[in-house]
Image 1 (spheres, rainbow, N blue to C red):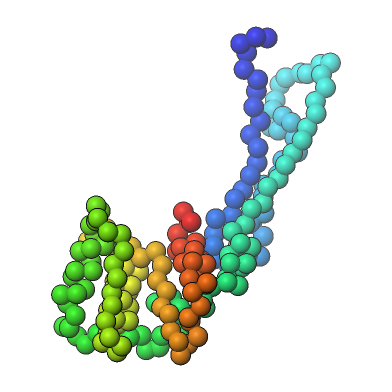
Image 2: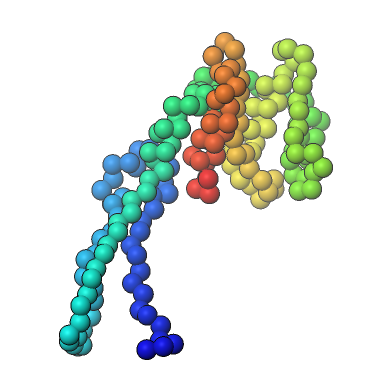
Length: 181
């Protein structure tokens, strides 16, 4: 009949958003299925009708993608990696001014520049400063209002120095830290 809306049958889809690779073989990660046209219907009669059914079950897993992406990252280059044991540290009560300036820059929602370049001579503490900033941003807090998405520490002695792996490493860290990615 014109103007009458056709009934819609919802498609069944389960998207696995868990990026934890340990969850990969859990049996409850399977897509739900249903083959009945009028499942749980009661007290009605259908005559002289032809029904054609088509069911598509979609199982999508971020896990397979993350496993493939992991082949192209700089393993051990994140701020909390065991390869940084012990992690670089600033001496207590030092570098407070530079740390405050970095946090102020990061908190500025309308910063005219979106990149902060920390430079200095070798062995003056750049890695220690960035390590402390990364640690302070690793968990969201009300006081800061922002959080670390990714951090990559290049290191020649640890063979963490392939620039072609920078962006896959950042993408991998973002994907494992936030379901939005």
